[in-house]
Image 1: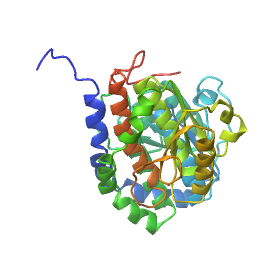
Image 2 (image 1 turned 45 degrees about the vertical axis):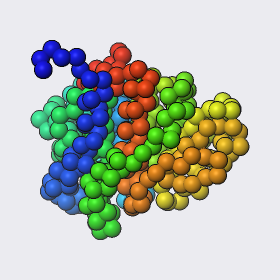
Image 3 (image 1 turned 180 degrees about the vertical axis):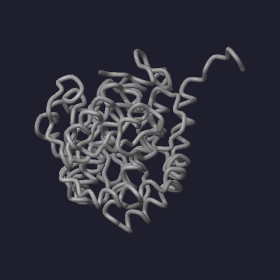
Length: 344
C-alpha cells in the first residue's frame, strides 16, 4: 500500500533468501566457459583484484581460490593507487579482476582504465551489465543478482562467490569443481533453511566480537564482520585463525563472543585448534563446519570445500537478520549508509 511503513528487514530477508535463484540464472550463462578459455590462452602472469565493501571480501575468496586452484599469484590493488595516486603499476600481462554490485564507483572505473593503459586484461564481475565499470572493462561476467534494494548486500555477495568459482573452474578446466557448482543453487536453498539460532542469545547482547576463519573462508569472515557492523551495530572484527594468537587473543575474556567458520580442507585443523584455545580462555564460541568440545556447533551442509564458505555465509545471513531485528535495528536502512557508494 502506498505510503505504508516499511517492514524492517523485509528486503534483506527476501533478497538473501533468493540467492539460489540468482546463482541458478548465473550458471546458465555461457560467458564463464568462454572466459575460462580466454584466460587459458592469455595465461596471465598474476591476478590483481579491485573492489570495495562486500565485493572486496569476495575478492579475498578469489585470492585463495585462484592461488590454490590456478597457481597464479593474486593480490589486492587499492583503487586509490590507480585513481588518486595515479601510480604506474606494473600490470602488463596481468588479469585485473574488478568486482562490483553497482558498477558505478568512479574509483573502480578509473582503476579499470589505468590498468588497461598499463597492459592489463580487465575483467569485471558486475551486477549491472550497462554500468560504467562494465563499459570500461575488456570483458564482463554477469552476477545475475537482479535488483538489490536493501543497503546490506546479500545475494550479490553470494553471486560474486559463485561467479568467481565458475570462472576459476572453467579457467582451470576443473571438472569436479564445475560439477560441484551445478549443485550450488539447491545447496544454497537448503543452507538458507538451517537454524543458527543457538548463537542468537549471546550475540544479541554483544558489543564487540571476533569472526574467524582461514583460507577460502577468510573472505566470508570479513563479510560476516561487516554485516554485524552495518545491520546489527555490533563491533565485529574478522581475523584469520593463524593471526589471532599474534595479538588479538589478548582481548579474549570470559563470555567474549567468537564466531568461527571452518571448511573441510587443510585449514580446518588450525581453526579447530584455535577454537579449543578460545574455549579454554572462557570465550563464548560458535563454530560452523566443525565440532569442538565446549563450542556450540552451527549446522552446515556437506559440499565441495570451495562451496562451503558460500553455503555458510548464506546460513549466516539469516542469523544476522534475526539478530538485527532483536537489537531493534533495520538491516535494510543502516544509519549513515546508502546503497551505492561512489568513492574517488
